[in-house]
Length: 181
Length: 333
Image: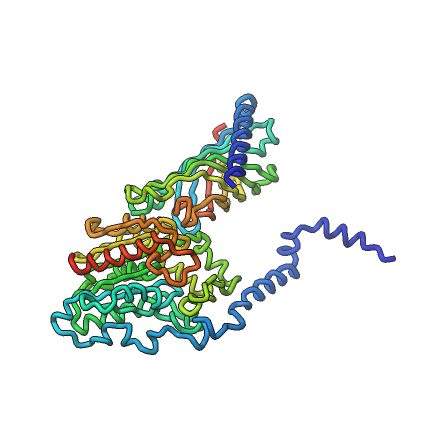
């Protein structure tokens, strides 16, 4: 299982590298935005996201995204919720690009870390690789703002035996993107 | 020879979502499927050898005076009333058996009393288990607590395993102890706030489709734990642990003279070890809270009998040390 995961992450990294290199050589598009993410059964984790695409790659259907979401900007504000950070990177593919409502699928990876704030818990897993898949719909408003709703599944999550206990599998995302370029 | 080609082509061209949602027949099919799945709600035949059946009940139902100090010694002397009483609260789908090893370990001690509470709806038939809410489970703890107070006991200690721990946390959070003599010490073994099975929060959606689940109990466990788990009770479990998690997020204040001692397995396939982190962060004052992480892969590591897992020497040491710790704290702090 770990070997498969390593292969997947390596493959994703290679795709990201090629896409990034190609993107900056071609006409690129950049969207900046905000993400509201809710694990089913746990926290709101909110943060910032950016997406890049290029005209020459898959007719601007393929996007490379990076993001940072954290419970520090969500459930942990003014509460005792665990502070946890997600550093995310993903590839999205959009269908029906000429429609106002565009379905899309994504595959993501990244890094997760929860801060348990005490040495008493040093034996517990607090960090993990992220590997996720998601699908959703994106609507472009008349003011160019893109509203994007997705449901996703973390292929790696805590199960009591291993993995951080606050990394849940099923999540929903609401993203707001504004095209800068 | 008949030509099936047009039908074949139609099958290729019509996709499933179109068939289901643009076509009334498809919608009826979805509804029928949902109803048929929902109707397969309960097990058709429950064996008499199971706790779920109509023959085996928790023994505390037949002879509660053998389990509850409020009944076995309803008129304590002033000296007896000052001895520690441990109210032992088992977990979800379990029975008084879960704490029987502590009672056996205690022997005929006169230093303290034990009251082994059977949670509401538990230890009875599948139907009775199914029809009770988490508040019903909790009331059994309150009944014994109030009976002990009425009898004059002043040194009451609560001990909760798994969901028993969550029910005690909820009682503190909801202010149950305000205006009453508060428990002197609270002990929790593998309390559940976060489930290890992260799909549990979806039980409200998935539950009606599955009806019930079947636990993999050993032959010994089948008389003391439910084998068939109604999804409705899983919804109740999810409700109470969600409430406790949100209460911890806001902060739970212990009564001023009460200590909280948590013992949590580091690898637990039922109650995620991170539950201890939420309790550590959510309960105050912090100087009244003690958390001990126990190197164990057992859920409710203090119960070793009839385990499907092999019990190691380390497991026996963990049990012994935790029992000693609980008694030591109650007798000398």
